[in-house]
Image (cartoon, rainbow over all chains, first blue to last red; front, side):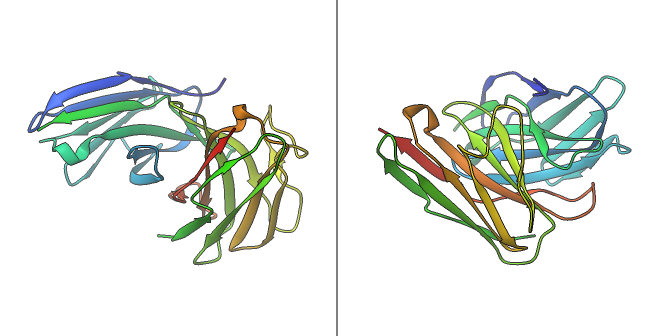
Length: 111
Length: 115
């Protein structure tokens, strides 16, 4: 399977703490995207990082990409209870437009 | 960003029946995809919906089970045929533009339960 891995599978933190999720993928990519999913609903797009970028910020989100290690991380700073959700990374492999998803991280932020 | 709607949002179906899911986009898009998310799992690509031609299916998915139509650049349907309880999943359509750096947007999903 080309599916990527994410760790941790589950993460429980207190409000105000930072949350870091890691993602690994299998082969060269065009870009990598991060999504949030609340309780089995649709996916909300968070951020896209291109293969030639190493870091990207959006509000409280920071994404890094290390193509030599085929890995990415998502950092959520100053977490809130509303950040409770599942987070998925998704890779667009070179020569392929569809996305290959990681296994996901379930984040629980305790108020 | 594209606004995507799906119908129905959820359904409960009997074994052996079929369900057609509709995906409507508010603007013309180049790429449309259908994904499946089984309970507690991540998303898996079913197929790429090609406008005016047959869909391109991923390994493990076949046209007889998941026929797909895409009559124009804003609409697509996915049919889940001869359903069994193992087909209980969330089905999501997604869209993207022509560039490899384009964001891929997802519809709200259709939650299917097969009894």
